[in-house]
Image (cartoon, rainbow, N blue to C red; front, side, top):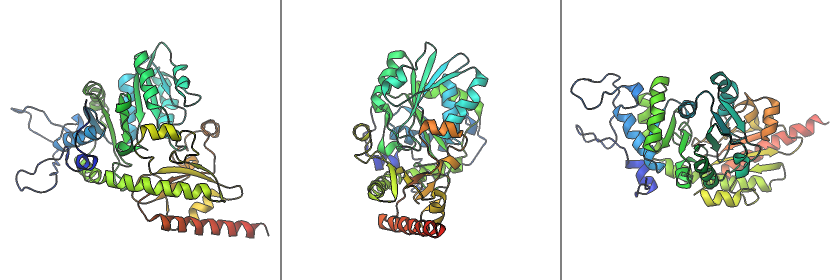
Length: 391
């Protein structure tokens, strides 16, 4: 499908909006009904069938943003991931997954797939050969996440798309960290694009949702399972999500700029030992990221120097919140070992390169100078307590 010709912010604001024919309001009306007529109608509407007016309208907006033919909205990112995977996998099938992916996805595969007779292989690295060498005769899906959570590794979209098509495999991506503002995987040959819409699409830490975008054929296949799984979203939340997406382009671009500034500041800081951000030229995948992303995103991770306690540092922050999720307009930090990747064993986290002291930083829209001041005062507190403890 050809990309929508309208500009990003125009798509965010207008595509898929519903017309208020009765009162001529400026925004989409909200249809809260869970019961619709079934006689003498073209469509039998029901919330679990993903076809209420607000559901259909928002799906058009997300499809336009991802340059796809169709989309579906789910009750959470994991509902979107699970339904999409199970729509293309059955007993006896095999899937290849990138090693570093969201902890919830890793846990889903590691704990549940054996029960359904689905075999799986995690890659040893991120190069195209790392994926191709894992493909078996019964491989049906390749699943990637780029930038990855939480180490911001970059996977070659075009290469994965080519490998998948050469082997007749469906390629899927968790595109949450990039958002449609920074990356449109279908333009590089990826088949199914998945989002935790809770994050950049919602953007205000008050919505839980998931989204899938793809061809009409693939979405129809996912839909057939989705209506049985029952992972639909309430129309009120859908209405709120449409409101939030209207400002997504502006928000994400501001977060891109702030994250770049914060990454450069942290990279030069004497008390920071490591910074993971694809926008830094020191990042091993900088050129690759630049070739497939329009912006490097608002997410980064870093490690404090030896002797600094990551937990105490986060508790000492005053402006930046220590909070579970990400991508809100407010800046937040978390320890992946205690949150997003807590279900993984110590050994599994070690295999992914996730250290106990790693801090994931979701950069918001605040003034960078204020974020820097907050980090400086927190480091000073931890530095002082460390000195006191040694005396």
